[in-house]
Amino acid sequence: MAEKTGIIIKGVGGLYTVLLPDTGEYLPSRARGIFRHNNITPEAGDRVSVEYDDSKKPLADGVINDILDRKNVLIRPPIANLDTLFVVLSVARPVTITETADKLIAAAEHYGAEPIIIITKKNLDPSEAARLEEIYKKAGFTVFLTDSHDGDGIDAVRDYIIGTAGKGISAFAGASGAGKTTIFNALFPGLTLKTGAVSHKTGRGRHTTRAVELHPLRELGYPDSPGFLADTPGFSALDFLRFDFFELDELPLNFREFNRYIGECKYKKCTHLCEEGCSIVEAVEKGDISHSRHDSYRAMYAELKQRKPWEKKS
Ligand SMILES: Nc1nc2c(ncn2[C@@H]2O[C@H](COP(=O)(O)OP(=O)(O)OP(=O)(O)O)[C@@H](O)[C@H]2O)c(=O)[nH]1
Ligand SMILES: [Mg+2]
Ligand SMILES: [Zn+2]
Image (cartoon, rainbow, N blue to C red; front, side, top):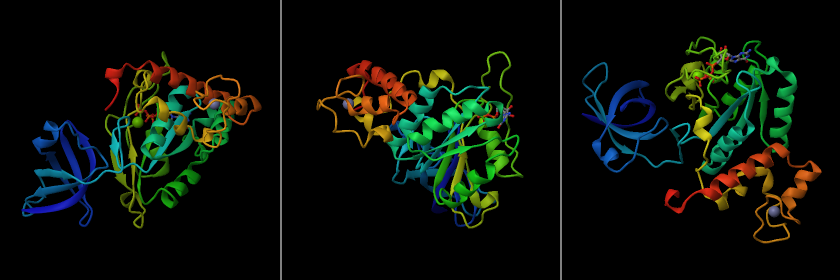
């Protein structure tokens, strides 16, 4: 028997694939019952201690004994130790709902994963692409404009992934049908992950990608990059209907462009919704903060405020 540290690449229905970094082998594994007992779910991205019979080839029947310390664990998409979240926003088919995008971005900020914006399908509606670009650049994010069919902007995203994000764990997230898997395939020719057409009737995606899956950059043609890039299942509108990833008092902190104004409002307990003397509302009026982001803030504020005490996380 052997015991080693590996990383969970994928988990479906309790069956995990663990990559053993020193040999590059994949070990199908199950988690010890103690995790379920303690209400802990091992997730893709987790570094784990696995025990297995190393005389058996191919490797099989690993047992996940332990989850090593996590930097974070996200609920949507379910992934652990995430460093960079690529938020994929399509300009059309499906159109981007900025409120949903801002919920995803605020959650990433809360968990300490850097949100990077990728506006895709840009050639379907260049003016909408420019509108979204302005909103997110103004907020201080790195923004990429791409079209996976025409190949526009793909090289810049790849350079960023290999250069800046290449050491850690990154993931694509966004609405179903936004084009996460398509851009993944465009970035790494040779990869043929399954994509799905958007419904003609509803303009929505069909939830083609079913599980989070980490791809080692090493296997995508970058032997010097130790990091991973994950494709994840898309969201439906329902997934972010109610926002409950953190407490109300944390909300302003998770809008990065608000940070320099916090503490400058007339009232100490300013909610930054509409009070007179609110430095954030003034910045919106002056055009330094976009209306779109402030609208999302107000919607999220209302949702977090409404939460009943018994719904709160301890
Ligand atoms: N015109 C255009 N179509 C695109 C682009 N990117 C993706 N598509 C199309 O959008 C549809 C959905 O693409 P997917 O990559 O499967 O979307 P996804 O985000 O992975 O969706 P889920 O796996 O359901 O979350 C497919 O028909 C793609 O061909 C693009 O840049 N331009
Ligand atoms: Mg997909
Ligand atoms: Zn204020």
